[in-house]
Length: 381
Image (tube, rainbow, N blue to C red; front, top):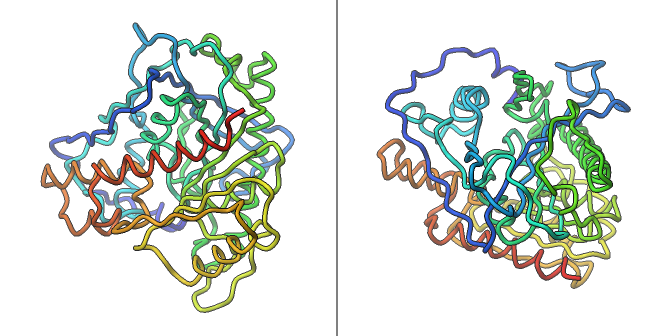
């Protein structure tokens, strides 16, 4: 998506809402969730819609809960964010999605807002989104990881995410000056901003673990959340541009012990047919575990070349390919589009374009087990 798309205001009417269902977590723990509004007063926002303003982030924290009784179930998206998602992502960003018939605010998660955290220090995982996508469309994987005993911190990257709602009700939409898929300089800037966002979030988690409250408004935190963070064990995973970010962030920041790249390029090239400059992580290798997970439906020369360079550095980097799948199989679109097809809200061929021929009953547990088992093994102490 580009900024020009935001000027287009004609959106199909929504009729007869149908909520896509998110699969339940498989781990032994109930899941709590909270949202943090983080403001970096040492850095100005780089994107055109926020020039001169401090960089603001919103993150979701999913964690094992001690009890969920009396705590409301969180929606996947807030009403305001859902309205923008329906106008941008579902119309322009992912044209395969239904143009009507879906109430994007109706989908419930399996997480309970503000529930007390289960006592005990737990490994922390950061999640970085795909380019243009909000953190909310990878809710099911975050919930599953939290149910298995991780604290999962999912980041949006405002200004290049389709929509981010702040606690005061502001909704910020995508504001990139040009499309990073065809402008190498924008892609490079985008990754640099994401890497600085990641470092800042890690810094704020240190504040939280030390007993402080990093939320910009000082809103009340779930009980025992601070004491659940084990910052001696940190992993990071990301989808697409988020996978690029996770890989390079581990190279840059020794606090990150392991990373999963869900189909993110490891070079800076975005112009077809031109050789790409490798990211430092692919050029030099890394001394910690990195897991590259891709699909057979989204291969191109950039993946083949940059991932081969990464794998050439030895056994610290592993690779797995999911068959009969494509790029968004790693997101909530895998189960949701299957529900939409069953409800006759979208044709099967559009589901296949987004996630591949693989069925959700197969792809969801495969992705969950690949990511979960990797972090259980690499963050064990």
